[in-house]
Image (cartoon, rainbow, N blue to C red; front, side, top):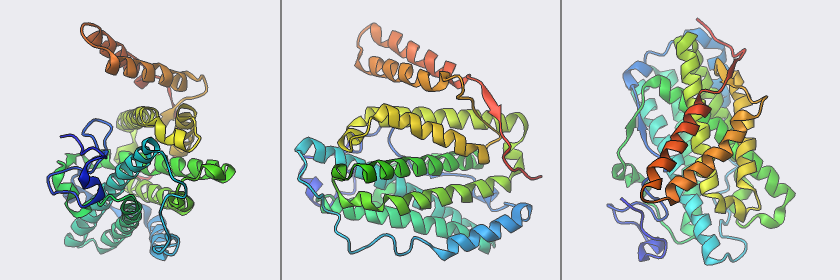
Length: 350
């Protein structure tokens, strides 16, 4: 299913129930909705990390960002953008609101399942996470309305099939999603503070508190991983670390660089931005994963450019050259997957 073109009349009104939001194409790089082993999650043993859980619970309960998202603030663009730049900005908003809302749905469902299973503490804990994601999605929804686009968030999940992930997969991917989101937001925020003339919309003024939510959520997921020590031990832990670091970094490279017009709009080089986000996320992940990629020799980061070029060549090729281009792309990502890793000193229990 393809998205409605931005020039369609629905872009200025409510979307019909059988339509995806404008700018949202159905492909591998599109944000998705997820489901998991809820009954297994309800068996989480908090006693393994009771002290850390109680401290994190109090921090989430405090809701430090309660007043940081001004509901009355105007989210209109500061300067009149060209039609091309306007479409780029709106595309970013749509992808972001879908990503945040999918997080809200997952956290809300986990919270509900915990409560039904008699795990009141865990249910409230994930309700805090759902609260933050709903706040983010709502704020982005306001920015979209300022652009004349109303996304029917409550019914959006019905238009896209949910992808099932085992609990270990969900925890690994959620941790990376939150931490890579933190570095994405904070690096954009730092850049725009140094280059205020590139702030094309007041939405970006809220990226600093936003990134703190992402960072805190990552710490919450790390805590959950510690309550399942088998997920980070031995060969399983190394394989899961390798697979999710590789897949999330690969997706980030392709997403950022293929949609580089948005970063160009902010005066950011997408390739250099992607490199810095990956480097910082890999370093941060040392606090949670038993293994991370070795970046000392520069091979992983250098191979990103080769992979990106091969990906573009495959998409642009045709006829007999297309399968050859695909073969080269697959060969490169397999080689990147197998690059050396190094053991971390992440805290593990059990």
